[in-house]
Every structure is written in C-alpha cells, then in structure tokens.
Image (cartoon, rainbow, N blue to C red; front, side, top):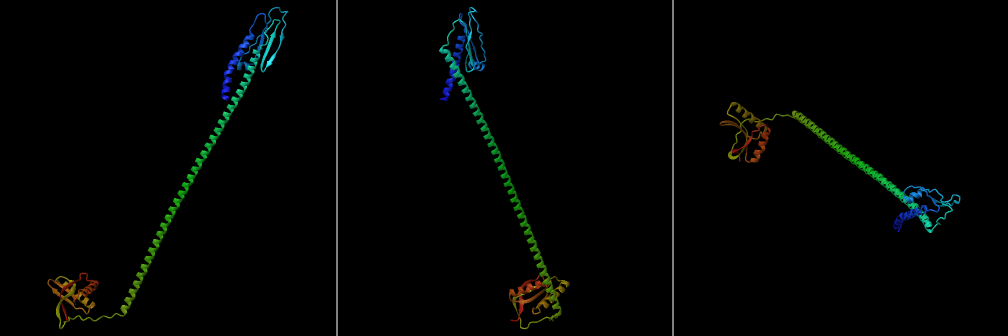
Length: 320
C-alpha cells in the first residue's frame, strides 16, 4: 500500500506543477484596461515546482490616467511563496477557487516532498547503518576466524612439540636400555672370565699339589721285561691292538721296541709283541676275545700318544 501511495504521489506531482504553472501564466497576462499582479516565488519552491531556479518579478505598471490610478498593495504569504498583487483603479479579476486550489496543491506538494525526502533520508541512513553493522559483523567474524586459525596453529604446534618430546624421550629410553644391556653383558663377561681364571688357578694349584704328592710318594714300579711263555695255551680268533707299524729300517725297529717297552710299563698284565712282519716292524698289545675289551685298551694307547693305533683281527693265544 505504501508503495502504491508513493507511486501515485510521484505521478500527481508533475501534473500539479503543470497546472500551477498554467495558472501563474494566466494571472501574469497583461490585459488592457486591467491592473497587473506581481508574483514573488521562493527559489526552493521554484526549483521544486519548475525543476530549475527561477525568479519572476513583474513590476507593476499603470495604464490610463496617472492621476486617477491608485495603487493598493495586498501581500498574501503562504509558506514561502509571497504573492504581491497590485491593484489600480482599473477593475481586476477577483480571486477564484482555482487559485486557492493551486496554493493548497503547492503546500501539499511541499509537505509531501519534505516527508518523502525525510523518509528517503531515513531509509538511506538506515541502509548506511545496516551496511556499517554488516561490515562490523563481517570484521568481527574475520577477526574471530583469524583468531581461530591462530589457535588451531598454536594447538598443532604444541601437539608437534609434544610428539617430538615423546619421540626424544623414547629414543633416550632406548639408548639407556641398550647401554644397560651392554653394561650387563660386560659385567657377565667379566664374571665369566674371573670364574675361568679362578678355575684355572684352582686346577693349576690342584695339579701342583698332586705333582708334589706324586713326588713324595713316587715309587718306580718293577716291570718284568722278559718274554713270557704261556703253558697250556692254544690259538683262537680274537683281537690285538696294533700300536706301531713302521718300515724295515733299524730306526723303525728301535722305535717299535721303545713303544713296546712304554706299553709294558703302562699295561704290565698285557703281553706285548714286537715282531718283524715283512716288510715292516710291528708292535701289538694283548689277546682280546671281544672287540669291546680291545676298544678300551685302544683308547688308552691312543691317549699315550700313539695316534696311529688300530685294532687287528686274527689268531690270538689264550690259556682257556
């Protein structure tokens, strides 16, 4: 409704201005035998009605006999428009209802124009205030957004620092564990070395004590180096330990005899046979029916230093 009223006022204003201009032109006409009317208008009203500043002043003039003219001024002020009619003795046109209607229309137009301008100014002010308010809201939102971004960046930075600190702490803990493990291994190795040294010292001390005891209780055994002949013996298949097998040289014979004497001292109950079986000198020990007995003596002979000793299966001499 307000929109349509404003549109109607804007349409009616030019029509009213045209009508008022036509009336002013009518009363300004110079008619012979009649007086003239001078109309003085305000510049703002003239600008509002005619669209441009204009000042129209009509100087009163007298027609006919100067002695018979009598001028009477009657000034009527309505708003800012001043009408100064000049009357002479010549009859003039009386004020008509059309003149009053024009004045009322001008007053209404002025009031409407002022109200409209005031309304437009208020609307413009409201728009500016709304725009300023929106700009302030946008500025506050931008500030809040920047603060939120800064806060998120600070949180991310703190989290990164905490993560780096945790990683550094874990690395230090791992290094500390490795160092402790290495220290423990070194301590264990030192303890093992100390135990080995102690055991070696104990073994050495025991060997020295045993050697001293052996020196004190040493008794040279008497070994019968003569050849023994078994009476009532017979031949069976069994095993002998062959301690040496050399060549046919004199040195091989001497070595075979030396090994035979050494075995006689170690096994005085076992017979030792040093013979020349072409083409070599051989030293054999014992007459064993079972391979197990021969293996036990073989291990002992090898422990004496005869690394080439072995078992030989053949005829052996037994008494039963």
